[in-house]
Each structure stands twice: as structure tokens, then as C-alpha cells.
Amino acid sequence: MTAPTYDLGKLHGGLRLPGHKTASTAAPIRDVPIPSQLVLPITQHVGDPAQPVVGTGDRVLKGQVVAEPDGTLGAPVHASSSGKVIAIEPWPVSRRYGDSAPCIIIECDGEDRAAENDGRSADFLSLQPADLLLRLLDGGIVGLGGAVFPTAQKLMQARTCKIETLILNGVECEPYISCDDMLMRERGAEILSGAQILMHAMQIESCYVAVESDKVEALHSLGDALAELGDDRLVLKQVPTIYPSGGEDQLVQLVTNREVPSGGLPTDVGCLVQNVGTAAAVHDWIIRHEPLISRVTTVAGDGIANPMNVRARIGTTIGDVVEFTGGYAERADHLIIGGPMTGKSMSTDLVPLVKATNSILVVLKTSFQGRELPCIRCGDCASVCPVQLLPQQLFWHARADNEAKLREFGLIDCIECGCCDLVCPSHIPLTANFQIAKGRIQELADEKARAERARRRFEARNERLEQEKQDRETELARQKETAKQAGPAAIAEILKRKQQQREDD
Ligand code: SF4
Ligand code: SF4
Image: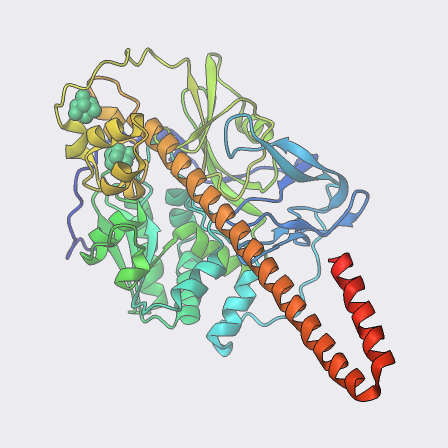
């Protein structure tokens, strides 16, 4: 079955980049063995950190919850294999260069004993949508395209809007990354099953499975799986191979020709976007009762001896994953988690693979990028910006730290795709400046929110004290009235008490 290309909206800007995916897609996905030690960060999702529910010395089983969400937004963390908790301590993680964060460290026993399935039925259609959403909460599933927003909560928020279309995002447009491509080739039926579960949870009757035109094998695999499924609510859509067509807003535009408003979400135009890997994880949890304890990741780049895609347990260190693939190439120099456009540089391969890790990229010594020169106002950055921003103007306002202008020029809509950097003849690090400016604005907003919370607490305290004072005075007046009727001795007693109270105040 071939996938149709029709009714596509238009993507502004973008770049056609060399894919560098041939080497990593040459062989099937390989399974990384259980490592001797797993390192599980308690924060692998957007929202509040999960709180450990195990302690040092505890024995744990595969799939057992080891940290539970604490707060309104979060996801549980499960043990990826059986073993013993040997520490809960800070460990280097892949959020930012040099960061460390609390992690649960498990010494694996190699037996891989699984926690008992609680006997729940896999018949999701027999569940009410609200019950299905609650069940999804327990699977630890987050957006596997990189956003790591807790999936159940994303669906719950979307249920407050009028959603007509589910879009499964199989558009893996960043160079080198091919984990979704391989997943679509090998697990097309499970991805579609996940889509059906999501559709039931959301009561949606239409789903587009969007795949880039250069992923021929994935398109065939999904086409065959769709033909076998015979569910005509699901439609395969081929989208052009152009970076960054996999951005949520860009994909909505391409697939439905609807424009997500500035500062808005796909749900504002009736769409819910989920990554194909997330759909497979939903299938694994609801049908196979396996929470999110492993993922497929691409190991690639000139600094890797044998590029490939692997399925590894969450918590396996990057060093262990790379060693399994055959190790580093001779002149390997630089480790990046994620792709070359949006990934983060790492200072150590001790960081664990987490739910967000879609790629481990190792490059050779970076070539000289060119000295930064003044902007020549060529406009190239604006012509490639997929969000139709004016990067050169944003850059000036970012350098001037002008928050009002940054807001006016739409910094909030910048998806940090890096297209503007790549074409700038003056080698200006535009995206890095935008990231810093966004961080600063966020810090200011957090500070304002903190100050506002403190102000409200102060006012509430004053109101409470005032109320208590009034209550006391009312009570004294009542006692005085009672004493008046009781005689002069009682009045003297009341006045004495009041005097004492004033002194106390
Ligand atoms: S990084 Fe931001 S400003 Fe630059 S091209 Fe991408 S969206 Fe536009
Ligand atoms: S591409 Fe670079 S030099 Fe050209 S306008 Fe943009 S920032 Fe200026």
C-alpha cells in the first residue's frame, strides 16, 4: 500500500538537510543487555520531580514503581529491571551541561524478575475514557519525541478542548536521528494499536499518521499494518522531507492546513499531536502491562564505530550503550544527547539514558565554525524561519535585554530549531541567544510569581490577624455585657483581663 500525499498545508521556511541516517538504519534494532547498574533520575518529565518510594537496600522488581509523582504534573518512574537499590543520590544527568540531579541507583541481579501484573484486562474498549486516562497515568508514559510532557495529563488537558483529530508524529526530521523510523518499520501494528487506545481515551474519530516522504520502508510497513487493521478512521499521510516539519505546530499546519495561533497549542485548532514512540508505549502499557522502562535510541555520528538503533533500559548509562554498539571511533571528540540541531552537549558518558533520549550523537573534533561578525541584514535567517519570525531583530532585542520587544517580536513562538544559525553568513549564534533570553524571561516570570505568592500570603496573614482581633473584641464585649448584668466585681475582672490582653498584644 502506498501512502498518499494530498491536502497538505504549506510550511514556511525550513531547510533540506543531509539526513546521515543510512548507517544507523542498515540493520534491525538491537537490544542492549541488562547493565550491572541502572541510574534512574526522579525527574524525566515536564513537571514536579517524582518522589522516591523505595529506600537504600530495598529489593525491586522490573516494572515496580520506585518514584511517584508529587504534584499536579508528573509521571511515575519504574525499575527497568530487578535488583537492589544501592543509593539515592545526585548523579550527572542530560538536562544541561554539567548538571546533576537525584537518581535512584539499582544494582541489577540479572534475573529481570517482573512485578506481578495486577490482572487488569487489556480490553481497553470496555473502559470508560476517563478510567482509561487514569490507567495511562500509572504507566509513566511521557512524550517520547523529546518534549517528555506526561502523556495522561496532556490528554486530560486536551479533553477540556474540542479535539477532532489525533496526529501521530512519525516525522523525524533532524539529521542522524532514526529511532522512530526504525520503530515504524518494526512495530507498525503496535503504533496503530496505541493510536486506537488514544482515540478511545479522547473519543476522537480521526487520526492521521504523518511520515516523511524519505522514510519509504516505514511508509510501507505502516501501510501494510493499516491494511490489515482495516480501521478507516486512521489515515497515513506523507509529508515532505524538510526540517523542521516534525515540530508540533508545523506538522499541524502541514497535515490539516490549520495555523496554531501565536503562544497557542495544537489543541486550540482541534488537534492532538503524539509521537509514534509514545503510541507504541501506550500499547505496551495497556495491552502488555509493561510501563515505560525502555526505549529505542539512535547511536550515530562519525565518532561512533558502528552506528545503529538500540532498545535500552531506561537508566542504562550512555557509556554502557555506546560500548554495546562497539565503542567510540578513534577521533571521537564530542558527545551530544539528541540531534545536531537541538541536542545538548555532555561532559561525561556516565549520564543515564532517560525517557527523552532519542539519540546519542558522537562527533569528531568540531570544525572551525567561523568568527562571529556583525549582522549584514541579509535577511537569510528570516527566510528560513518556520515560525516567520525576524531572527535578526530578535537578536538585537535579546542583546539589549529588552523583554517588551522580545515579546512583541514573538520570542515565545521560537521553537529553537537552529535554522537561522545554519544560514547566517555572519556566524551569529542566534538560537543560543534566544535560549538565554527565554531563560531570563522565564526567571523573571518565576520571580514575579514568587513575589505575587508572597504578597498574597502576607495579605492573607494580615486579614487573619485582623479577623482574630475582631473576634476577640466581640467576645470581650459579650463578656462585658454578661458581667454588667452580673455586677461590679465581674466588670472589674473583665477590665483586668482586657488590660492584660493589650499588654500581650
Ligand atoms: S531558532 Fe527560532 S528564530 Fe531561528 S529559525 Fe528557528 S524558530 Fe526561527
Ligand atoms: S542571517 Fe545573520 S547576517 Fe543575515 S540578517 Fe540574519 S542575523 Fe543578520
